[in-house]
Length: 411
Image (cartoon, rainbow, N blue to C red; front, top):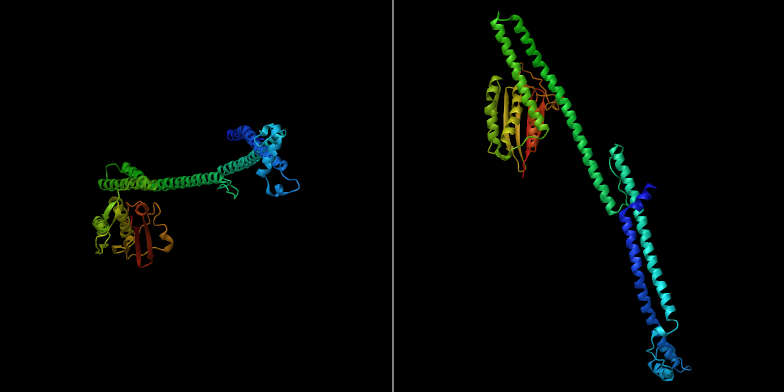
């Protein structure tokens, strides 16, 4: 009932029916004019045939086989001249002219009416099918909204417009589903991030609180112990500050709010700068840090962010591999640039490799490494991916670990 009501209230359908009615009304005068013209031609032809038959030799059937004969018509005109009958007589004076015209008008108007009725019937049926299909699409949209279905089905009977409509709805549904998935991922990331961050923050806060209590208890009686506790507090404050800075970085990277300044930079020179920055840390850990000689290699990069990504990976190899040597090399292929960072340390178990780039992964073999918050490798992964790159990790227990950073060249 609802569909029938919407059918009659549909302005497009009303316009369609009104258009057919107007065409039908306008067609009636045209049919009458055509019937009048055809009737005249028919009666004229009948007059000529009658004159030809009247003036012919009835014993000779030639006029039957040859049709209208001008000689026979001329003979009959001479006979009927006194009655005013000739071939120029008006067809309208013939007694059956009106009947002929009426018959032709009835035939033409009926034909036009049937054609318009067929068009109207086909149009209404197609419109009803279209409205039924639209109702089905609307119902399927409700099911998509409720999570029952993922897509609107497209049938073989769908016309171009309905198919385009279904395609557009499916695209919107896909975009909405993708958006919901991304929001779910962001919520999951935020939940994990806050959980990990609060957990990591508890330790230095607890140390600071304990040291403050100890300072308060000993007063100024033990200057040496007080200095040690103050130093420990400062160390924990440095950890908190570093954690805040690194956490803000990973949050910005995950939210894709970093504005990279890509320029044509020298990767070899960048790696040399990394070696210079980390030489003091390497010396402190008794690790030999070297850069293998290589020609200048250029690619599109943000030198500030990529420098930090490489520093984090190299620093991780220095501090957490138990190695005495870390080597960096740069190579180039027609479509890619590779930076390889290798060490001769203990190696990483295969099941642990996937955890390298997790946030707050701070498992270190060195007790001297207290300022690490375990976000550096996650930051490096995000930065490398932003540079159209990928980090591959190869490791074997007792033989060391090799990080291969492969950047696809940007055209």
